[in-house]
Image (cartoon, rainbow over all chains, first blue to last red; front, side, top):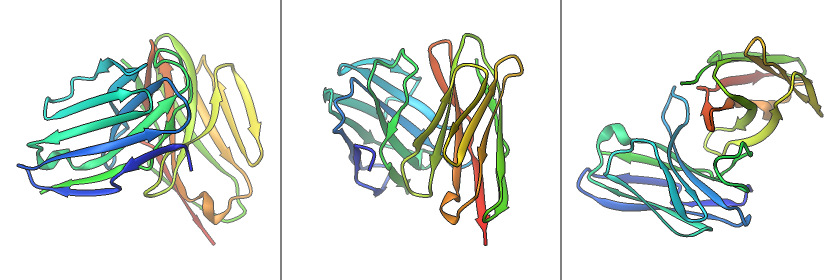
Length: 115
Length: 108
């Protein structure tokens, strides 16, 4: 148990669906992240939030829309995805802001399949 | 940009020692992390090196040479539960970049 909880664990969706991924951290951390993990590829940073303000969007297509209502919760809204978006989506948090090199605490991820 | 290179897969025998290498190129180096990720689970923090040398933590040790852009993770007395992917991540220029991970398979 890392203190970061993600739901759902698995998600299958069609290209016309709209779905949301949820992440909650119980660690009192100030920064939260979305990463994409595809097979045989490095973890790719998607979005960063510090104190619930978005500080980084790593050239992510607009079909991915993050939301951070408070420093403990992070969502990733999905719409009109493509099959190549199928991947493991990992949420992470860190104590300090994302500009400091602190260790990350990851959730178990949502395995997404786009049909 | 940053470039991180790790071997993709290794097989080792229970009770043995395995060394997982990571080479990197970055500017503004400010630390290197190792994470362990079991299949279907969250990556978990193993170690952090920012100065040259060896950091030992139980059965796991991590080494860093900044001048060579090189790190390794040493796993001793391998156990079956050590079968996992080991991710090297480098912090440079205010960015954290991950390698592809090294899948270690422990066999009896």
